[in-house]
Length: 144
Image (cartoon, rainbow, N blue to C red; front, side, top):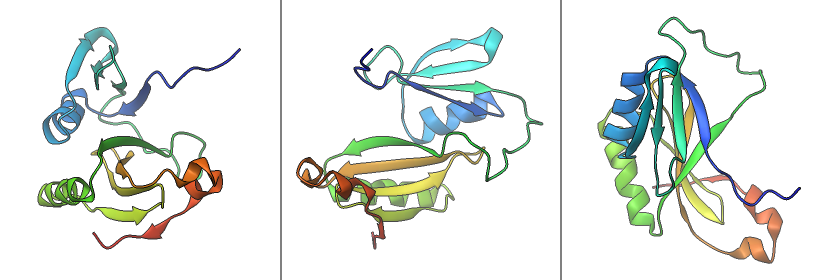
């Protein structure tokens, strides 16, 4: 067996409409389809679906911080640092707490969706990882 590429990611949210307002409304990810019986929304970034949310109910409990599971989802937003800076300003204007990091191979911002799922937006900064694969593990605060 050989995996060719990552197909899609599905995360749990409490409320489908609130998640759509966040991912489609604020982040601008186009909606591909909805599956009402499972309270799911599928989003597309150019493939049939690249990302989806599944609503588990407004009374769903947060997973403990030390439980296994998804740590974050990352979306590439461009190729220039000014695109990342503009995204940071838009997210802060929407009331989100945003943290910025320099990963050497990329520059990133991190924030939480309405359900506490961590989202990363990034721009590629270097292809140094091709010569030094360990470079992907770099993380220093970034003044953005």
